Image 1: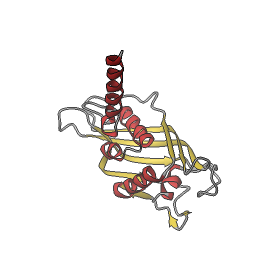
Image 2: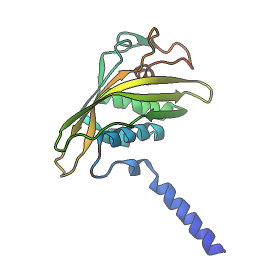
Image 3: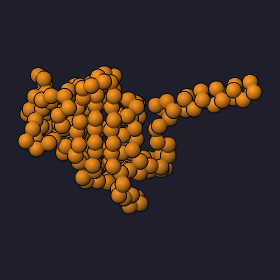
Image 4: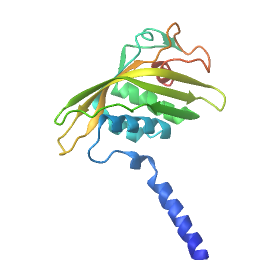
Length: 193
């Protein structure tokens, strides 16, 4: 009976090691839908290296038009963030949030034509929940548009997010007024900048 127990422990440890953040990276060919699923997974696991791997070097995050110029604390939301600003906010969020639950609906996203180097998807539904502690948090629910670029230099499709357009601001509201109040993805990210 003891050898079975030892084998079970080894199996569990091997499984946990295999589930670290580096193993959820895409290997080889991927599609834009695969990339969005990795984007979702990177947030849910707080895996900054995975997020880094799915964003193009010239990535830009565009804030919801209703958020531009509003304040989150003493930070005024700009029109967009480049890759460095976005990664900084996400890194802080991954480090400080009590819980992150990100859901991107990839059902119905078609594959690009063979040989395509750019691809766009519109009105992708997302739900983003960030808990600051066990009882307080923020949620964003709406749609985003994404643009992708494909680097085929390695001999396979390597899609990355190049532009992300947030359109999740609840109409008629701005900022992070109180915990539990729906807000936009951009507002949540700006609160961690």
